[in-house]
Image (tube, rainbow over all chains, first blue to last red; front, side, top):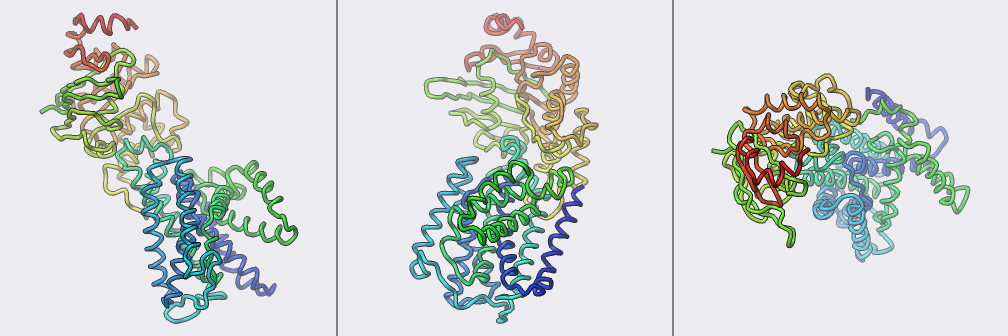
Length: 316
Length: 248
């Protein structure tokens, strides 16, 4: 019965695949940039949804991992490492390590306390990044060289970068889809539903949650890496708690536990920001009420407007 | 060797002693009932055995293995099954999924990220067979949140059985059951007894006299009487402390 959400995903990815071929008709570098921005947001949001939707762990510090990933990449680039695969390994290692340390502490709590402690770690990350004077401090850092794939600059701009981001989005979508229906994902959902019961079924709940936290952090880190490639710039602002809040909005707006929803949510936010932003300076005054209406009238998220509830499936 | 041996268990919260020098020995294939007035410390003792609450001193041995230092999940892995007084299942999972995930804990690693767990035939067949044991197979695909109270009590038992326990802790299994459901559950537990030793906290005296081989009477954290149901029924201390007063 979950086939409809798969069909819907196929349509989504099909459209994204066609975009670079369709958009030149309208002659728009700008639109491609916008789509890349939305896809990067979607990658981070899908990883956060693994925590929130499947694990019941509402983190208000997830953007910190995007920031850590971006800085790991930027610092690597500044130090002459340009191989994107090597940068990927560094990014995964650094975000994984930070997640291991912060997660081990944060997961001693749950609910609103988990939210508070992830917020605190996120802010600590933010202030740590602002203190990196050698790498731009508060102002951030413009990168004069970008990552290469075996010496080729194909992954630096244009359609090469577009398809790299799209491929990563798909890999994230597919990976989280696999995890969500695997044995591991089932334990994660059991712990979300009733941690005491999961424990009395024989599962060391914290361990499973920590692994999910690591996976989510590393995916967010990868979106940070790609963000550097796209923006050619890093700044501590990537790691602020407002960014983490945006990610939660995307996840909730899209629909908890729905990867398609996270993609739609990301596009919705990016588009509304651009469209409203181009008309009115105080666009957030309109954005707020729009969010309220969305949450009130599309409780299952945007994905629910397209795919009926039972087709989405509890296991999705 | 006893199946479950509790030796000199103590627990206090500040000045309040909730378990005082409790010793219980339950043989292979035996059912032991724990009775006592409300606030006697029965649930505390269950928590101490299952691991939610650390004892201040004393030992808990299951099949001779010391388990009192283990976490809750490790004790379950070691073979200690448990049902809850207040039904505790996974509401958004179906009856079959509830049972299958309990079985999963005892069948290979759960650190598998890439295969569809819902399609694991061996797990599902075992889960269905377990539901059959408690008579719930016709409700296998119903989400737990849509099951009746009586069905949930049975599901609770199925979840515990799916973990292939060596010993079963039952916290008021009869709570809230109608007469017919109660009779059925007693028959079910009677069929399990013998192959599966158990410790049961229960208020229903009929059930206790039908199921229990031995009984402990707990009052104010201490065991005041211990013996066969008939011995306990005849014991003046036990009568005064509990049976007479309860009268329900």
